[in-house]
Length: 333
Image (cartoon, rainbow, N blue to C red):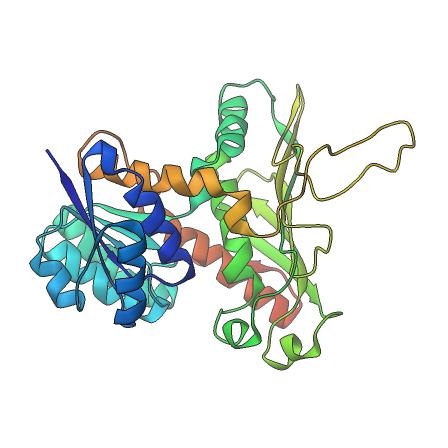
């Protein structure tokens, strides 16, 4: 039986999802897309060989089996509610809503309806992070004494985006907060954050920082460092180090690593570095759409439930407050 997936929004990330969904045609997937820029939607549909419709109303009229939401944050909550009240499973890019507070009625409705909503934390589907989780959960690493998470953009996004992004912790590090809680099975309870601006001064002018670090304390007392930057000139670098009493494992340390060794007799890495998060997580994004189709069909569990994504946003909020106040902040739950 063919699974019809409706995609709302074909901007940068939506267009990527469209490509990945259309690649599943051989797996009985029928893609329908829409965007407020109808010309763009029609062009992408023509390029991919899928269908485009005029607007969201017409898309829901197609009675899709699932909906992918890849539009601006302010539209996430209304579209999630529209879909789940029609009994349609949802994949939505993070965050669930514009704020944790605005997410609460959405979570309540998801729970009331028993609805299926997958949120886009793609690292949960990256093979390196999956292996790191398996290694820790199996006991191979022992107890963790050192955890380091890093998200380094090669270059900053446009300033007009940064002005509405909510800050570096909410835009970037929220992925690290999510993956740390998902891997360890523990909650982060306190954050102490610092940041700096040494690049484009307009980033500071819109109230953001271009580099930051947070000390995260888990509910069992374990600590982790989470760092992020907009100016990792060597390339896009996203990694996780788990150092345990029995072993150590790293996610993201491969031939595309954006760095080099200072040891003169050691040549590393061997391949070209990634320039963007699309490149770094290309396979994870493909798996994200595959997993959503499987979720629609009842073939797998939800890889990222909405309540877990909102909890990562709570941690990001605490990090932002700590950055602004200069003191450690308890995560409000």
